[in-house]
Structure formats: C-alpha cells, structure tokens
Length: 332
Image (cartoon, rainbow, N blue to C red):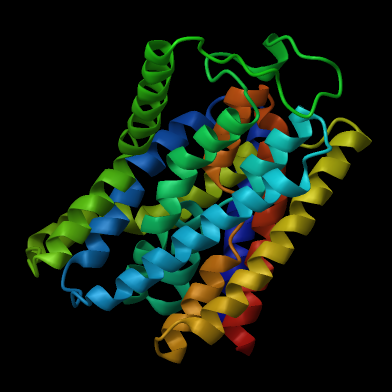
C-alpha cells in the first residue's frame, strides 16, 4: 500500500504548490524562498542526519564515481549531438538533460520507501552528481558555446541560427592566463558556494577518518530532514509553468526523450556493473531515474532568461520520474 500512497501524496503536494501559485496565494518568485529553505536547511539536515550512526563504508565511494560519470558524460554527448542546432536550443538541452535531481526529489522518495538508513546511498550518489550540476555543467556549457556568463544570451549579439557565439579570444599570453584564472575562480566559487556540497566534503572527510557523529546531532537535524520531502515537492509545484507555444513543447519533448535514454542506460549500468547488494543497486537505479535538476532551472534562467520553460520541464520529468521510481520499487 505504501508503494501507491507515497507517490500519490507527493503528486498532491506538487499539485498544491502549482494551484497555490495559479490562484495568487504564492507569487511568481516565491519558489526562491522555498528553494533557499531546501538548499540551506532541509537538504543539509538530511545529509548530516544520514551520517549519524551510519557505518563508514568507504566502498560506497564507487557510487560517487559512478554518479560523476553518469552526470558528466551526457553533457559532452549533448554538446556533440546538438552541434547543428541554434545556440539557444543547444544550451537548453545541455543544461536540462545533464544531471540528476537527487536532493530535492529522489532523497525524499527513497527515504519514504526505504527509511532514513537508505539515504546514505543517495548521499554518496549526490556527491559526484553535485560536482557536475552545481558548477561544471554551467561552466562547460557557457565555455564551449562562447556565452558570456555575465548576462543572458538574449542580450548578447549573435547571428540568427548560430550554433554558438563568436569566440572572443585574448590576444596576449598574459590576457589568456588571466582569463583562465577567472574561469577557474568562477567554477570554484560556483561549486563551493553550494552549502550541500560543502557539507558533503566535510562528511566524506569524517567518513575517511572513521569519525563518528554524536547522536544528539541526529536529533537536532531530524526535524529539518523530515521536512525535506514536503518542501522539495512543494517547490517543484511552484516551479511548474505551461509552455507558451509548440516550439517550447518540442523543446521539452526532446529533453524528455534524451533524458529517458540517458537514465535507462545509467540505470542498467547501475544494476549490472556496481559491486553492491541488490537493494543498494536498486536504490541507485531509482536515483538514475530522477527528474531534471533545480540547478538546470537556475542556470537556464541565467543563460537564457527562461526559467519558466525549465521549470515546466522539471515538473513534467518529476511526474514521469515518480512513476518510474515507483515501478522499480514494486517490480525489480
């Protein structure tokens, strides 16, 4: 019964977030408040809580490496397969096909199905995934497409239908060195300004040192960890928007199609290649079936100025992901 009630309850929370926005109870940008709560409070609480009393099995770092490869390889593939498309479409697909929505979506689902003990697997998966989606994804997209990170693409002059913007290359060795240094600083700032990623680093360091977190820390973080499911699903509903024309519908369908191929390949690799017990591999399969990332929405807003379409894509893939993960839980 839990296998049916859990996804239905999540769908109701998503629907509530959307309806409250449509009726004016939530404003257009109110999702950012919930987003700050999720990234600044509930996800950090989930991460810390999952390490309290958990066995420090360094073998789980294979899951971290696996998720890093599953997140980064599709980014390069999308750059290659979209090389004839306009730069706007290339950026949208690269930013929204890449990565997994682990903290905001799959952690609550897995926590509901398997209990708090299973979250440690999701945490180890999200470490590698976060390194890509919180920094590398945006830096790679803007760098390879020659998009300035300082303003939206719509404000940057480029020929109509161009596959990428004209490159502006520094003319002197000193200027090139300064440009590379600035790009590296921007990437590191983006990576380490993510509080969940910073906590991941601290938790992994403690795990490698075989240090035990005190039980009282688990009690302190438990209320925030328990609130993560509700806040995350509410935020997904608040991000939901409908496309304005058929071109946007086609863009969303392309992203969904590519994500389905990527997720199916990653889920199959998790089941057949990872050296873990069946339950752990099943959890990783569910993580591989997650929806688009919130970072994809954030970076789409910065690069293209179109968070609405990315939010709709996230919402649609969230519903599909909920059905897929529930099916894996019940059938595999």
